[in-house]
Image (cartoon, rainbow, N blue to C red; front, top):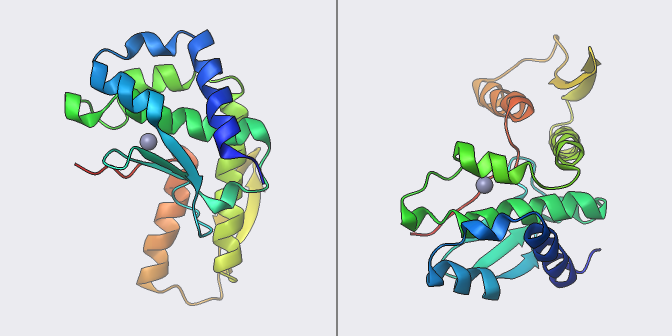
Length: 176
Ligand SMILES: [Zn+2]
């Protein structure tokens, strides 16, 4: 399992090299950025792989990423650090267009995103034995056997996992 404190320091160095820190405007933001702490979450998740809690100034990285390559964990920390930069208290939307521009400055961002999406689908299938992964035209989907009764609750879950394919899989939980 990666040492997250080391990876946080490494991610910050990479961000600084890409000029991302230029968007830290207030001294409060800088203080949060300089003192933010990162820890592993306790459970396997598939719809959210990281979160940032402003009050505790704490980034939590999902246990799902414990065996992921370093560049994937860095991309996850990078994303959560951007929530320090784009603090909602400054009136920012959680994932604005500008947020995504800075997110894509992360090296290997596309590869990390792909890895995370596929990982989420695998974990989803582990937790839902009737679901399985299918590849179609180079894209990954989750499917259930047509003979299996589909309950409304699982339809909603399926909608969610399918939407993961088209959206960012890391989301944030912010205390206000
Ligand atoms: Zn987010």
